[in-house]
Structure formats: C-alpha cells, structure tokens
Image 1 (cartoon, helix red, strand yellow):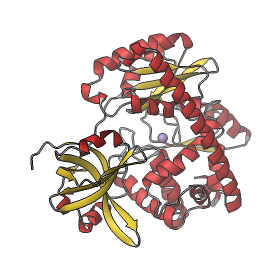
Image 2 (tube, helix red, strand yellow):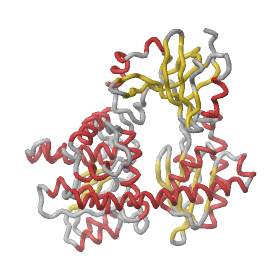
Image 3 (cartoon, helix red, strand yellow):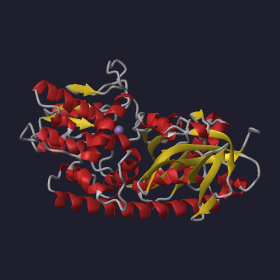
Image 4 (cartoon, protein in one colour):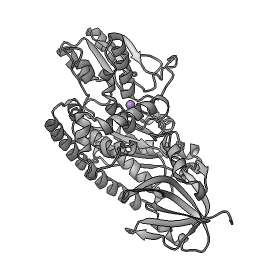
Length: 473
Ligand SMILES: [Mn+2]
C-alpha cells in the first residue's frame, strides 16, 4: 500500500504499532505521531474495525480514516470515512475470506481503476499478497486462491527485491516456490521482526529498491528468526518440564502454563508445540509490564474463542478466533482463569477433539495413480487451508520386503497393491515400522507427489499414516 500510494502521491508515511509497547491495531501513539506529522488521512490495514474510540479521537484531530480490515466487526462501527471489510453483516462483497492484506489490495485495485492506472500498478504487489495469504493461514478458496495462484507466479517469475532477498536466504533452493515454502521459509522471518524486535524492518525490506540494502535487512530478519527459534525451543523445554513435574496436569483437558520470564513473542508458537505432545486446548502466559498476557491455541474442531469468552470475568482483555486467541489478565487471576478454562473446555470438548485426525478425501487403487490423474489434481492448486492437497487411502497394500527405516525416524516405503508398485516416504512414522513386518496387509493414507531424478519424473507417495488393513483383499 505504501509503495502503491508513494507512486501516485508525494506525501505518504507508514506506521506499524510496536507490538509490545502499543499492542495490536490502531494505537493512540500512532495517531499522535500522524497528527504531529500533519497527516490528514490514515489507511489502516488488517485492523481498525474495532477501534471506534481511537478513530473518533483521530477525527477530533482532523484526521480521516479508511479502514481495511477482515476481522469481525463489533456492533458499533468506527466513524471512518470508509470501511472496507467483507465481514460486515450487510456487506455485499461476495468473497468473505480475504486477509487484511487482501482487503488493502482491493482498495488499490479500486483506486487504480478510478484513477485510470494500469493493472500492473497493483498487480506488481501480488507476490506480497500471496505471502500474506500464506502467512495469515486464511482459506485458499475463491478469490484467495486466484490471488495466490497469480501471486505464486510472481514469486517464481519476477519476485520483488524484498521477496527475492528472503528467498535467497533459504539453505536449499526449491525448483518452484509453493504455499508451503512461503509458510515455512518466508513467513517466520517476516514475523520474527515483530516478535523479537520491531516489525518496521519488514516494511523496510518490502519497500527497498536496492538489492544490497534488501539483502542486509533480510539478514537481520534471519538473525531475529534465529533468536526466535532459540527462545521458542528453550521455553518449550521449560514448559514440558513443568508439565512433567505436575502429574496432576496430565489428566486435564487443557494446558495452562505461566512463567513470568518467558518471551512474549513466541508464546503462540510454544502453545502449538505443546499441542503436538498434549493434544488439547493450550494457553501459555507470561508477565509483561505488570500484566499477564499470553496466547491460546486450539485443537481442530474446538472453538477456542468461545471458551476464552466464557472465562471473560477473569480477563482484562481477549481477542482472536476459532483456532487461536490472545488474552491479558492480572497475575492473581491466573489460577482462577486456569480453573474456569478447564471447566468450560471439559464441558464442551468432545472426545473426538482429543485425538489428532487425518481427513481422507477418497479411496483409490494403485492402478489409478498415473500422471494423467496427477495432472488433474495439480489443476486444483495452490493448496492451503480449506483447499487441502488431496489425501487418499489405498486398502490391502503389501510391503514388498524392501521398505526400510531411514535416519531413525522415517520410513521409506516400497509397497504394492496387486501388481502395481509404488515407493513412498513417511516422515516420523518409524515407530510403526513393526506393522510393516507383519504378513498382514495394510491400509495406507498418502498424498501423491512427483519425484525428479536423473531427468526422469516419477510419482511417489508421501505417506501420512497406515494401519493394519480392514479388508481381506
Ligand atoms: Mn489479520
């Protein structure tokens, strides 16, 4: 948005509220800064819909607001000159799942149309839009999927200076960047700036035009990300030790952990890590400027936001959605909150929420797995939330005797169904290898992938899970 406006207007500033000093969203410090700079219009991106008071405050200072947001509006809308948010109850915009960046993109598109600018004036930023779609974990359906498709094309064919600088940091080069690469390679480094230091660095990277300057900023983000990784593994270890030291906690339906010294920037990541071992709604808390604050993460299918909302009498503030939330409370409320949260979750959690699930799209036979079929599946890309890579099950599969454990943790499968053979890789499945050594057949759950080797293309299976076969075929 800053780049786009700078190209058509001489006086544009950007401002990112400091995550810890100002909190998320529109801040009074930000508005005061704008007033001091003589700003007459603020365009908020990914925030503002809940900032009725602050936007009223800005209006009092003679500053207009255009709100570009995708969060659920409250009953009272902010007194902005314009609100772009497809989640408004009476908004006729047909696609509701744009991310905050996507809403900003629509404003640029509309401005370009109104001002008679060529499409390239905003389409050149599609590599940033797809990065936001990937990083914000919004559904890759409808318009998001179209934006992601063309965004990935840009990332691969003509990335901007900033995106290119981040891609150059990756240790191993991938042939074609996909959504997963953006989520795992780019998003953590972009987010690390805000978690560990100041998110302004990310804006500086994406507004840089000099490749050398961009490379230097990318390097700083990389260092922030390394600090973040160290903090998150250290805190995860401490959290696991706390859980192991309190056997009573093992039988609970929730994990709530509090340590005043934990780094605020990684609490959500730590919560997600804990869920890998203790599969249940999890809250990780720390102390910051006299107030306890933290992040909550859910298990699939359980509405975490509702559960936190149910504990609001113990909280100073909270916000979030189905799968993730943030909260603040007074130190003396941590224990009562933990008790209330456990009670509400225990009442509302169904048994099926407590074991990880694998969603299978269809049963398939090995004889059907051909390039002609694979090419059709490829047309449904890019994959992401709510448009997942198809997962198949093949029943009555046999080990050929050539499957083996690799690097202690993984299984390299060489399996057959009838006269059709496939190889595959199953990450982290080594614990189940014994099952493959039985004479009985197995049911195999997998995705189909393409393997390039010695100039030849073959199809192989990425195995997600397997079990003793339920068929006798
Ligand atoms: Mn957002």
